Amino acid sequence: MKNTARFKPGIDDETMSNCAPTLGALMLAHFSTPMMHNPAWYEDDKSWFASHPGRRLRLRAAFKGEMDVYTSDADWWKRPTLWVCVAEHAPGYHERTPRFRGQLGWIDLKSDMEVAQMLFQMSWKEGEDALQFKSYISNQRIQSKKQRSNSRIN
Image (tube, rainbow, N blue to C red; front, side, top):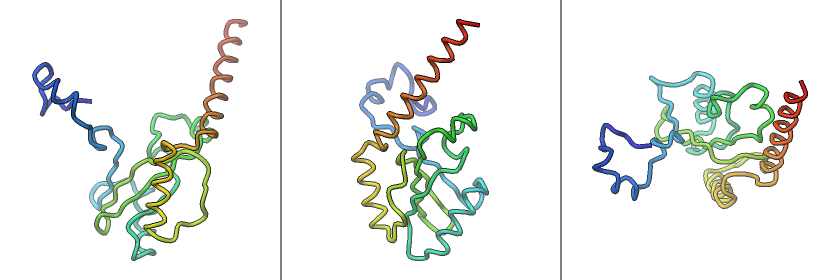
């Protein structure tokens, strides 16, 4: 996704083709501040950091509508859980990034180091529990095939 306010199509194409996009440009990094936030997850994250004063990283399940915004209620509940890393850069200033889809493989990460290690493992797995996500995709294909067959019959 090119920012045409900064880069001119046809002029800057070569520069952009060799340029790594930022998390913001990819819309993968979401920010919450005291002035701009969704109360549901902002208050939850804010109170979590307040009750864990030595911590700057949190790994939690995404709230409905937080990341998968164009997903129906039924699909949201069927999908493997999306795990979000919340980093507190300063009190009340949070960066939220989607990191992993799959089952909860830990009970409670006790330190930022444990969160960092889990993030590394998730990255190594390409951000998903491959077996669980492939199962979800397979089920979606079967459902889609059934719907197409039923629409031809009717």
